[in-house]
Each structure stands twice: as structure tokens, then as C-alpha cells.
Length: 150
Image (cartoon, rainbow, N blue to C red):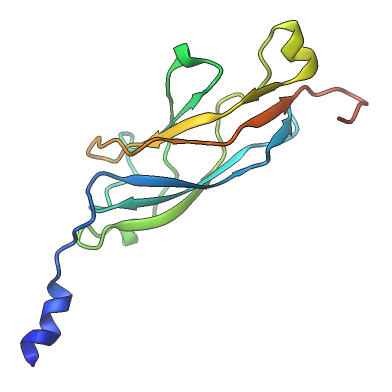
């Protein structure tokens, strides 16, 4: 009977060391330039808990309107080191706002009427492992017009 009580506590962590993310929220669906902010919420699972707290662990975003710009790195929000346990892995939620400028394109139509975009996103851990990619819903970016409410 003693062996049965010990075995469950000695189970090996079988979660992948490659982080996995899932988009859980993206809001709002419409913003005014220089007035509103976009927020992204995602869940993360990392089998060896080596995500965050390093310059190699980043969030990467790509604006759908500018494929040639590629993915832009954003520092991963701090994670409390007390939850880093490679034997248990890491499971959690992250909420952040993109630091990329979310403005309409500069041609006259988009400057006057607004623009639509979505983000593609992935993360990396301290070992350089790249997570799966997720795509946000679209957001409408409306120009800021003084005295006019859209």
C-alpha cells in the first residue's frame, strides 16, 4: 500500500517543452486612434516552465496589413519566479496590449474612413522554442476626429 501512495507523486511531467498558446479574448473590435487601446488575452501551457523573464522569451506580433514588416518582438510580461517549476510546467493567462502603433494606413481613403487589421501572434521561451501561431479577430481602426463622434 505504501508504494501505491508514492507512485502518483512521482509521475513525470508529460507536457511538451514547446509552449502552446490559445487566444481567449481580443477587445475591443473597434478603436479610435489615440483614444482607445487594443487588449489581447491568451492562455499558455509550457511543460518546462521556461517562458518569460528573459530577453529570449518574447511575444511576436505581425500586423496583417504589413506582411513585409514581419513579426515584431514585444517583451513578455514578467512571471513570478516562484511559479517556475520544470517538474510541474507552467499554465496561465496573459493579458497585454500591443505596443505596435495601431493607426490607419496613410493613404487618403484609410486616413479619412479608417482601416481594418488583425494580428498573427506567437511566443518563444527561454530555450528559443516557438509556440503555435494564433490569429486575432479583426479590429476596425477609426481616425480620431476632433469634435466628431463616430
